[in-house]
Length: 271
Image 1 (cartoon, helix red, strand yellow):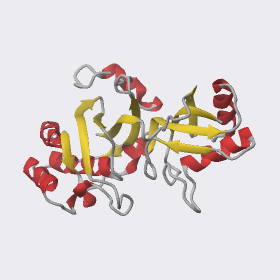
Image 2: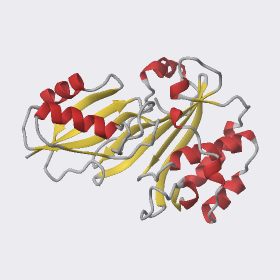
Image 3: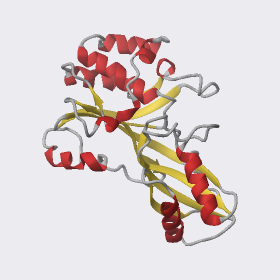
């Protein structure tokens, strides 16, 4: 029996999400099919997190377990030969039999991209908000999320029925970058739709329709308001999954938006 750690990027636009579902196309299911074809046997593929329908990944991590042993390079090349162009295996590493992509992860970082102008090319990777936004107010409200809190108001309990809603947010950064407003959120883990609801609530603060006091109230008492503010999945990317000993990576953008990294002088986010 062999176990491999996979680092994967994908465009989630046309998928039902990471997790395998009946009668729906998923990232996990597509990877399992490719691995079965490559190895000629049943395999187990488990991810570090369940990205929602339409959500992307710059570096999702999964483990692949199979009886057949192949060099990591052969695994990577073989999977990529069999995967559609919107899923790409970046790295494959042989790992210890006890390694688990989800259980051993110590932190996850998500990036959300909000566009300040209408665009024909990046629509599937950003959320265009035409209203003026007060970034300073959004930053102040965002700091209320940092630390260990109960995020029951920001979770979709249909999918996390038995999960604790207490989550530790290490840091949330919000900064303008060229024609974008970039959110980078790092935490121990995230509940279903939690990041999108956090971003949606902060956008309403930026619009002036909610205040930092309203956000504080949502953290103390259960509220349905975050669900009504859920940001679209198009702008959300799983950027990094960290394990013991890993360093936090600087901000990375999707390939099509990467040139904007050259215009980061006043962004406030380390690139």
